[in-house]
Length: 246
Ligand SMILES: N#Cc1ccccc1Cn1ccc2ccc(-c3cc(N)[nH]n3)cc21
Image (cartoon, rainbow, N blue to C red; front, side, top):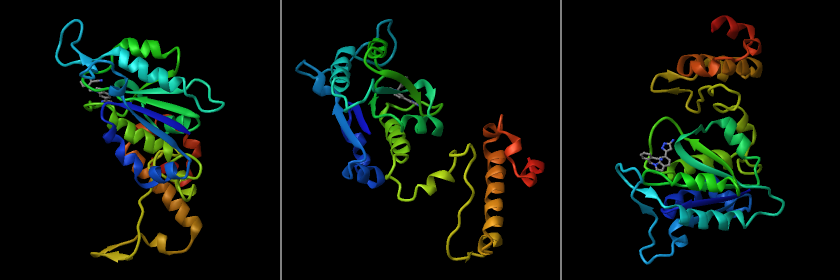
């Protein structure tokens, strides 16, 4: 997968050189390129913002540097890729979810536009639709100072789903949200820690009972912490014990 990120703070994306995503880049599984928006300005001061039409606080990102940066990306497509997906982090976007991460992990070419100030001139979003499949995406219902933190989270969530990135693909199956539920609690040695014991079933070696306990814990936790995730969940999928419990 090819990922391009445009930002005025390229150093904000440095953590993507570390750990699993960094190794995926070294192994050639992920071609991630970070572009400084100021490289696409033409004035002496490398200006990327200006005052908002209609007044109001703060500044808005100028359209032309964005069009220059995004045109360069759209014109440099990986072999066989169609229109890249342009993800624009925004408090006013569709919600980023595990399902969207899986969807985007299927793409050959993603681009991320990291806004700052009060956002990017809206005409850039409109212009981009001729060159990209444009997706404004929200990380959650809170306001960040810019798109970079959201891109760090999304690139990690998407990148870890690419084949070969996570050592044991099995670990992707049972984690939170992979099957619509929160994950079960995990434990490791020692079996007794500060007078707290590991649940006995996990020491039993009975893999059937362990799987049943873990499934029950997923439903119990989801019902307790994120009942919204159970709306519309097919109760017929519940083992009988869980069905009576909810
Ligand atoms: N837009 C905007 C805006 C509007 C008012 C005040 C401050 C900002 C900051 N900002 C500028 C760019 C930008 C990008 C993404 C987010 C963002 C995403 C999520 N999920 N929360 N916040 C915020 C961003």
